[in-house]
Image (cartoon, rainbow, N blue to C red):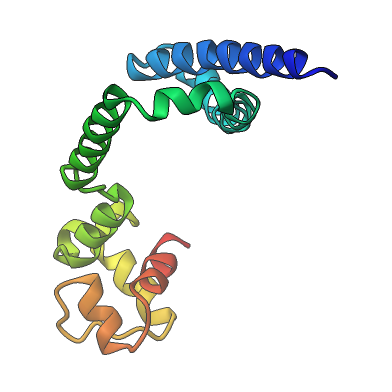
Length: 160
């Protein structure tokens, strides 16, 4: 394969895969067909990295001229600062499942037990049959601490 053929392949791959990534990225941003675009975007993103590597490799002599220009340096600085800005100002990721479970475990049993059983009497019976003491505890967490067990075990007993 000639050098020009390699350059043509690398440039064509880079261009076409960029179009797929760009299109799916915009679709994901606006939540259009998310079910179909996420995996495609991620996989083509990985392929894009390889295509760009080939593009730079096969066109390096021509690109070296761009790397020496002030414009390239300035745009590199702006890009780096933008990336740092996104990283520094990224919103804290929320773990909704953990928040819900923590709330249920720390809420008073008169409010949390009905999520798992019909009434308090049935909950008390189930816990006693499993050898779990309530002893005046007010939350599932307190019951688990009294019995030296996991709050999830308490919930499991209630849901049987």
